[in-house]
Image 1 (cartoon, rainbow, N blue to C red):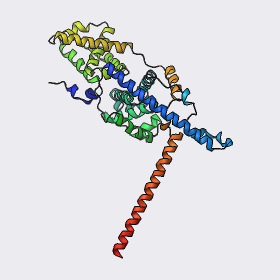
Image 2: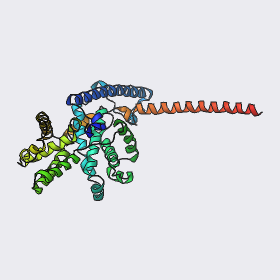
Image 3: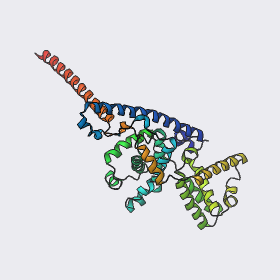
Image 4: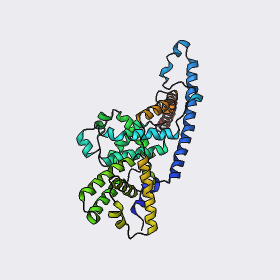
Length: 355
């Protein structure tokens, strides 16, 4: 019989080997660079055309074109490492942002599970998108709003925008973009439930010191929260992460979890399976212990470079966007005239019948 977790969309579509995860990110980044380069070049050519049509005196006022006039060949595009670092910084801003809401909202709606789901959404979103198209500062807001709904902790948009200071229209627009990138697969399986199961199992069957168990459990929750900023969620199962964090917590407290719990927990399992599990736990422990979040200074440096290589197509004030809107309006006018012509011809035909 298959494990229930292997039947979930998370297991099927959001679980990777380390090599496959890196390959997915590198492919997405390479395609993004190629696409943005084309748009930057197109923007540069359009701006040049605009300047050529303006008088010398008026050309000084063309800053309202909305995109910095930079030589495309001089632009330094972000590396994959830059993108991951910037995303990591903004992921760490989700809990503090959630903590800005009123106390009753934090306690009853924006729980750790909601914040964890929001972080997961951000990480999944940028597997298929780039910060050069969508800046994380807006995506994290959208993902927190969406996560609250998904986890049945809905916060009204009016109340939400009072705190985050982002127009509700922007949130609604990006909510669609995020949902498409998630393939509308909103369910996220976190290690929290598995961790609580271990907490109950230890106190019922193995360890009698309840205060010690409670301490280990609370410490493991902190470590689960830390693991959210790593790639653990993409590589390992929630139950493996929860057990690894429990083992880390025990080691930090000089508590022999192996002798008091794990030895008895897995005594009936095949030796090869237990050895493989311990190997996985060691990998998770290494990832969590070695992880360091992006600093404010590092994020500011990357953000400054990002400003020069953002996709101008996503800027509503860019020459490309204005051209697209103009073309759309012209096409709508053509379609309107065609429809009017067809309606007029139809009315003429109807009139002939009754004449």
